[in-house]
Image (tube, rainbow, N blue to C red):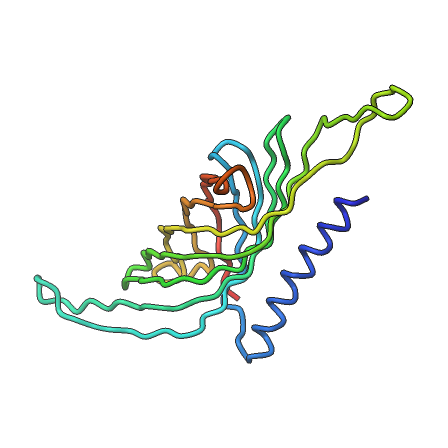
Amino acid sequence: MKILIKLLLAVGVFMTTAGILHAQNLKPATINISYLGELATHPGLKVGLTYPVKSWEKSRINNKGKEKSILTAFEISPSAGVFYHRDYQTGIFVLPEMGFSRQNGKGNYKAVGIGVGYMRTQVPHVYEIHADGEIGKIHAGYNYFVTNYSLTFGKDLSIKRNIPVGIFIKPQVMYAVPNYNGGILYFALEAGLNYHL
């Protein structure tokens, strides 16, 4: 029951962030859904929205005399997710991110991003000894302030193929505190789809 309350709290934070962006008359450009593998192999899921805050386009002539255009954008992406590490922990997080992306005329893009949010982990197989000497299972977990730093490589299929979808791969490092002496690093590999609204 406690984990359900914390999950609802995380969803509430996500919805509040999206509500604040909507109140600023920003409309989401995409809905994102992705596989998020902590250490690449511990399975997870991440969903979010992408709000374009500012974008600008520049054109230049390349070496072959053809015009080349680059679209640069600043975006905010509230997201929520979960990952499962068998016999170790399950992590639930809310992670608003912001980033800069550069997309060429073929729809290929690269982005750098940073996020700041909250993560709750649930640890299985934790026991305590009661006053009568019996051993009982307890719910244990930790609350973290979490940040992430990411690089994204993607392709917007709406540019050349008129398909309202983009695909991407996003390696990232997540840093959670407090933990151990200076926090803990998680490497995560994210791969997914952006659906254009």
